[in-house]
Length: 106
Image (cartoon, rainbow, N blue to C red; front, side, top):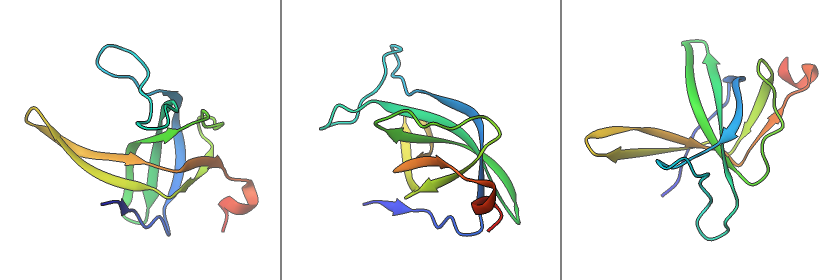
């Protein structure tokens, strides 16, 4: 099951440039089935209740976004995980695209 996040009213700002998503051996992960490379971008999600830093995984081309840039997060999916007594939420998006100053003010 896929659980999508309603991003209405949330602004996203890039906090750290996209980097390869790597496994425990340091090898870049790839999507099962397609073999496309996976990327991880740190963003700050901000709404009226405050902000949170999240890592967003994308697949395919490296997102063309820069630190400090407002971005559109398309089809943001949240997935709970648990491994070796640790747990959390992983985030994946169809894409991260820079917002223009006009679209950021909407």
